[in-house]
Every structure is written in structure tokens, then in C-alpha cells.
Length: 150
Image (cartoon, rainbow, N blue to C red; front, side):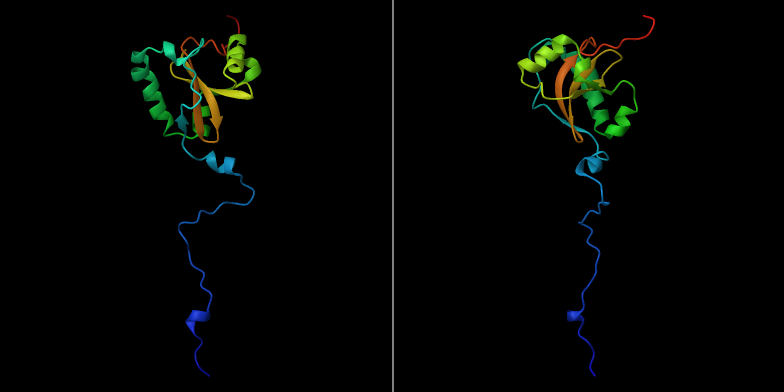
């Protein structure tokens, strides 16, 4: 009897290009582990919370630096800081709800508020690991905090 040819044997190799995904995990679950990125496709330039009123000095000193920090973090890491949180649409001020209707973005259930300073906020929409920048809120008026005993 002769030797069997190696050509006929199935080979089981490691393919480093294939990512193993545990069963039951959705794409959103996997995206939770990715660092945040953002876009400006829905950025509102006008209105009460539009970016037209932004002081360029504020942008370079605070916003740009904060966004650079966010790029290194996942959403879980960002939400560990109390300055950053989800905001249900029913909890935003009436003026902001009206503006969402005007710019035809009233189909969202929630926004995300990212603290730039203790008062100033950037609001937008989270889609997986991406953040779509919407509003600049320098006075924390879109969703003001209601502290007890104040």
C-alpha cells in the first residue's frame, strides 16, 4: 500500500483576517467596544443651539481637545463620567423640541449630551460607536439639570 497524498487531506488552518464573534452578539454589541468617532452630517448651524454662535476661541481651547479625548474612549468609558449622558427627547426644553421638528430630526428617542466644560455641552445622536454632532449648548439650556434644594 502506498502513502496517502497530502493534497487530499483537508487542512484546518488559522485565518488571522477572520474575526471571531461569539454567538448571540449583535453588531451593536461589538461596536460598544470600539472607540468613538463623530461626524457633522446633521450639525445645526442656525437656531437657538446652532453652531453659528460658537466662539472660535472656545472651540480651539475646549471642544477640539475634548473630542480628541473622546476618540480614545468607548461609549462605556465616556458614560462613566457624569458630565456625559443620554437625554430622552421628552426631557429636553420645548424650544429644543420645536427646533428638532423644524430641522426634521424629531424621529429620535434620545440625544447624547457630552460635557465640554462644567456648563457647556455638545449634543448629538449616537448611532453605534458614531456620534453625529447636532447642537452647541454653551449655557446647558437644552436639558438643564434640576439640582435638589436650589
